[in-house]
Every structure is written in structure tokens, then in C-alpha cells.
Image (cartoon, rainbow over all chains, first blue to last red; front, side, top):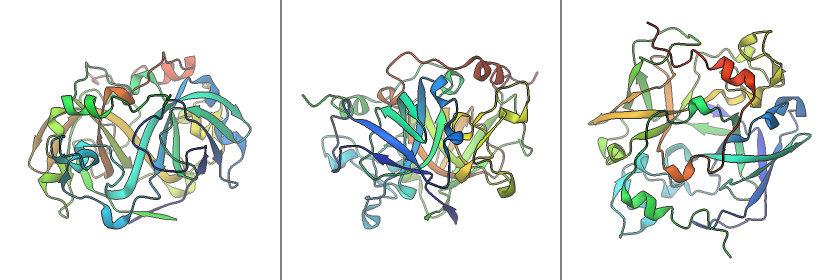
Length: 155
Length: 155
């Protein structure tokens, strides 16, 4: 077993889990008090960061270890839990690339974090272009369909 | 505190930690026996996956919580631990996008995983283009310099 301790917490206005319309949500990641702002020093010289977080409200009894229809939508094909990104997954880890807006002391202001208020943060990493796919990427049709309204502004 | 359990293990030929030359390394991620191959079903319909792993050999006493020179190289600027991707970080989580070569039962064959043999895997997620940066990315000069030989083939 591996034991982790959150390094910070999400502050934003989204208090309920929602599948879509994350486009307008801005968030503050506030470092835990065991860190000081030095831990974030110079992160603002990157345009993007990768945020690793914990789906703390995902119900342990609902964790899928085999396969399911993404979002339990029967119109989508049944695929393995590791072939989808939903929250009801073993270890309940989320990972999202966000746009860095600014750093303010021990707070990092970001756009495009699909995590609700109070979500525990496990890690923050700068995005380097060398860590993005170096070959053309492709994905099945259902994934594009699923993501159609994900980053909508909800207006 | 958050307790996690590895979902699988890396098998490859790299047994020692090395900073560069990951280009030719192919790896097999073997799911733990508590999973069957259904958990990976259809992942091969994606070209890339994001692998979240645990730097199990990173020495707990060397974990940096403030700032340091990346790779302890004094020619590089001293930046916060969350503005770099090195292994000596709080929670010791690694995250890398890899190319999916094939799935074989409960084994996923990948290229471009910068983790040594026996590394515990915490999660596997499919890469969807909608989760890649949607704006132009930029990074400081030192990051490009650091990554110069990272994906070399070592030949």
C-alpha cells in the first residue's frame, strides 16, 4: 500500500459534480500550510500545468474494476475502466492539464481544472512540450462524442 | 491521508535510474492479479495513454518540499519543486503520456514510459485530444535544455 498526503486544495465555485460545462470554471489551488510559496517558485514561467488530484467524493462502493459504459450511458460502448477517464476508478486519481493564469504567494490560479471545490491535490507538474504526444494521436468516435460539451461555457 | 494500491507493474530492461535516453525503451505494464483483462478492454482504440506511477525508489529523505536546481544542476535556475518534474517530490507521483503499441490480455505494451523495471503503476487513462492543451504552450529555456536528450535512443 502507498500512503499519500494532499499537497493542497481546490477552491472554486463548483460544489456539485457535473459532467459538462467546465469551460468557464477558474480555480485557485491553495498549497497546504506545510508548504510555503517557494514550492511554486517560477511555475508562472510555464503556460500550463498538470494537476493530479483525488476524486474524494467518488463512492468507494461504486468503483468499477472491470468495464462499463462511460457515464453509464448505454449509447456508448462498454469499455475497460482504464480505457475511460471517469471518476469511479481504482485509486480515484484525476489528472488534467490546466492553463496557468497567475501565481499569488502559495496560491496558483488556473483555468480548465475539472475538479470541484475542496478537491485534494496530490501533485502539480509543469507541462513541457517534450512530454506531450510526439506522434499523431487518435481516439475512438465515442470519446469525441463524450467530450463534445465538456469544455462548454454553460451559457 | 490517502491510501492507494498499485494496479500493476512495469516490466522493462531498465533497472537503473537514468536521466536521459528513454527513446528506445519499450515497457510492458502488467495488471495486478486482482484485475482481469476486461479492465483494459478497448484501450487499444486509443493511440496514447497517460500512465500514473509511483517513484518507488525515490529516497524519502531526499524529497524536496521547497525549491532546488533541477537535477541538482547548478547551471539551471533554482525553481520550486512543483515547477519541475523530478522524482524527489512530495507524494513521489510520476505521470507520462506513452504510445500504445498493443494490448495482450492483461498486459499493455507501450513506448515512451520513463519508469524503471518494477515501478508500481497507480492508474492508466486514455489520452483524449480534448484533454491536451487547447492554447499555445510555452516553457522557460531551461526546460527545453533539460529535455534535450531525454528521448534520445542512446545510440
